[in-house]
Length: 383
Ligand SMILES: NC(=O)C1=CN([C@@H]2O[C@H](COP(=O)(O)OP(=O)(O)OC[C@H]3O[C@@H](n4cnc5c(N)ncnc54)[C@H](O)[C@@H]3O)[C@@H](O)[C@H]2O)C=CC1
Ligand SMILES: O=C(O)C(=O)Cc1ccc(O)cc1
Image (cartoon, rainbow, N blue to C red; front, side, top):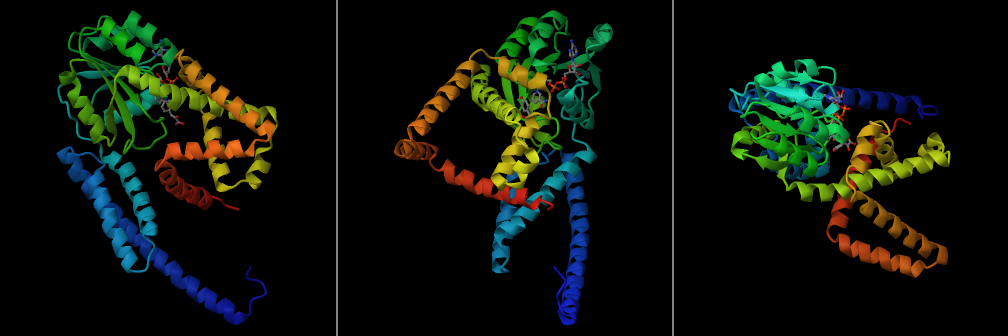
């Protein structure tokens, strides 16, 4: 509080704050200058068709700046945080100049379900890359024949529950060379349905992000090959130009990973929210007493409930086998609760240690990563 300070102190502080304001304004000018230079890099990359995310350049640049910071008595993490934030800004801005179009003679792209969340994002990315995109949503089927007639690619992004049926019933008459692709969160059944419905090139994708990412830089897209990969190789290059990392997987291996990564995780998040709701917890009070880790956790749980219940129901209900993953979790929870009820503190510690051993080097790595996230969470506090 400024009250109680004498005039000399007040004057001194005001003077110093004025100097800091001046430095901050210089920072703004430097930021403007940097953003302009990066925009020029964006234009050059666009012309050459280079990906917007260049991991090696990023790592080398950060290492140099960290070293220089250290020599200047500045915490290396400070310059790293600032530069990473600036690079994110650049990825967002690089989108505005558009992207190189890898395949010039594709014909049009028809996005089935294109007016939805993820369809909207892919429609934007494809349009920014110069493709002719037509949206075919649920009320547009009367135009289907004319849209499909000159389609070089049909991309399916409708709710999971209706994906396979729609492919089997409505996508059997595509032009022979047309690529049939989908963005569904599960892969075995949709890829199978596409292979059955269409004799031309087939490929399944699972974007491991939601429609609110802003940029595809560093995001992961899982690809499950279907048929004639040489015919859609350009599409993988296109996705890489958007900055995403392509991870190849067999559909079955992907789906089995999703039982933990998605079904079990979203289900336990759902129950966490359900429990808070039933206990009539007061979120304002919880936030007042929250540590940064708790705030982050509440944010991640609350985030689920800001999204589509149908999407998450479909993800959780899509695979029968997810019930085993979820059931195992319940068994482990119940056994751990028994430990607590018997007051077996020693056994708790023993199990804690064996899990820590199992995490191995990941535990300290995750601690370092989360430390940085938690500092950002704390920075966001306004009171
Ligand atoms: N939203 C997300 O975060 C992600 C979604 N996905 C996948 O993307 C797909 C779509 O999900 P969202 O975009 O979230 O759903 P959404 O509900 O926002 O979009 C689905 C669209 O399909 C349309 N549609 C429904 N029935 C149709 C029909 N018979 N013919 C044509 N269009 C029809 C709807 O009108 C809607 O526009 C799902 O397979 C989901 O697994 C994958 C990764 C992330
Ligand atoms: O944004 C989030 O919270 C998500 O989890 C987005 C998401 C939803 C469904 C997917 O298949 C993949 C990613």
